[in-house]
Image (cartoon, rainbow, N blue to C red; front, side, top):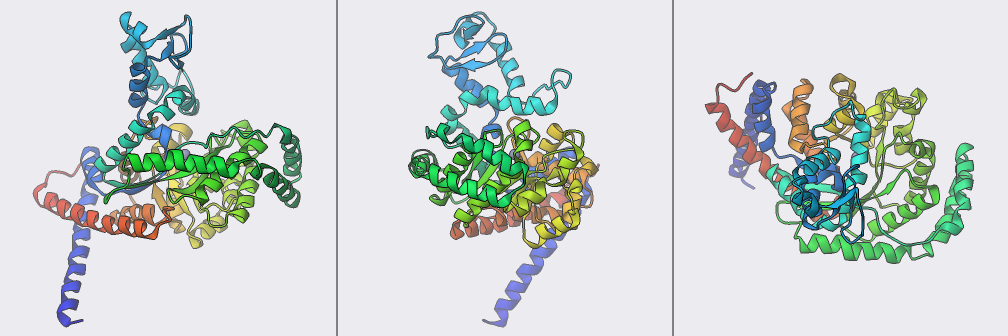
Length: 484
Ligand SMILES: [Zn+2]
């Protein structure tokens, strides 16, 4: 190595730093001008979107095209949809009939309003119900449109300068029968009421032995081979500038035995595929069963952690707010996800300020690099939490790794770009350097298991920032009139 090399390298490093400083100065100048800030954030590399529900991320128009193209039935009264191969009478009518009557456009607008927050009117329905109900309403159009949806998401990501998505695609279908094990629902509930860890683990172990003998491996492998691998390959989702990986998930509202079966399918599938990188738990956290069985669910994840120690769990936890549940219920979900469920990342974590021993928990998350996935639009719409009621500054103060994600950009009619705009506008103490850190966190704390893929995405992110910052430098020189 020569002095020349060091001089060249040193010059490169200094010029990069100076460039970042200029960008930072420009960013501070435009921070409160929404349009100018949007232009900045749209161009800025955003790394990965780690909290991403597939079906809620596809825009409703895609489902609507499918429904009309396939001539689905639409219920004139409720707006429900039904497959065209059914034979249904009034108030059901096919899309073609509605078109012939000149009513299709009206129904399209009605469906878009039911399947997303478009034209939402809080007088008609509470925002959390509007949000969660949407998924059931477009549900039958989700699986048949995986092709279009995945391509749509990749295209949108590229347009937004997003290089990685970690998406919760679908639950794993199976016809594994467990009705004969239903007595365990009662037994598990009893051991939960007693908070008897040992008994709960014993019961789960017995269930594990019983369920694993029922084709869990075959169904999980079939899911990997026939769905995940097929779509990933045939749609060429990965390329030099983009990668997508998936998380399996279970649904909180299920009965314990059913949920545990689903969790075993998820873990088994994750273990056998590099394309599946984590397991999650979804559905409204404040639902009756979700709340009643929360501890049990965390124990199930703990049990699976013992069986599958290499798997990563990202758990929705603390997507709650005062007034939604009893105050004491706000004090333990994130603690339990971290300390019992073994979460490597926390989804939302909005209720952190109410957690018992909150400072210890924050220190623990910081020390153990347990990242938090923050979803600003989602928290604002569903929980009515924004500005300084949102705990982002609390996480930051304790050095918990922060990532910014979109949750359900389709249902929420938003984008990852908008999340960064909100971040910059609402939190003046979050600097450009912080934001850049959050972007890098979204790759560092991703669950990508193949090291070369992670390294490629990180290296590519360096290059994207180099190009972005150089472009902002040119704007900064020419655009004097961009402040508020
Ligand atoms: Zn979510």
